[in-house]
Amino acid sequence: MLSQLMRRRALVQIVAVIAVLAQLAVAVLLMRKLPWWIDRHHIDRHHVDRNHLDRGSATLVTGPRTAIVQLLTIVGASIALIFTDTN
Image (cartoon, rainbow, N blue to C red; front, side, top):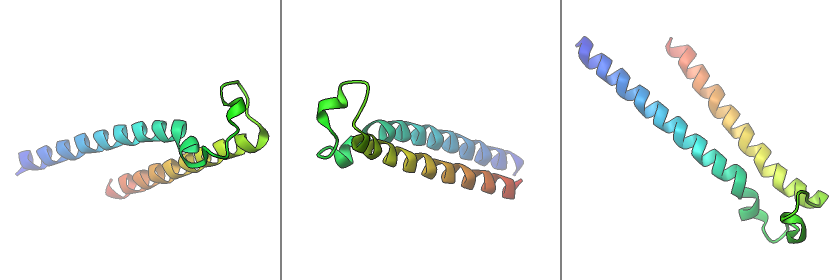
């Protein structure tokens, strides 16, 4: 019985690590590409290759990135609450 419980815990931990790694990969992809996928027609293409963007274009880029960071923070806080509750 104890061995089965230990196997189940190990499996849950492996799945949790895989989920966290997948979440990080998706977050990096979204941070990099999401603003251009959503607002590619509105972002000033003349300045995209340079080191700066126009003010309006910069807002279109930072808005979705801020939202992604907020969502990841909520997910992290939820995981922390679940961990705290189970221990």
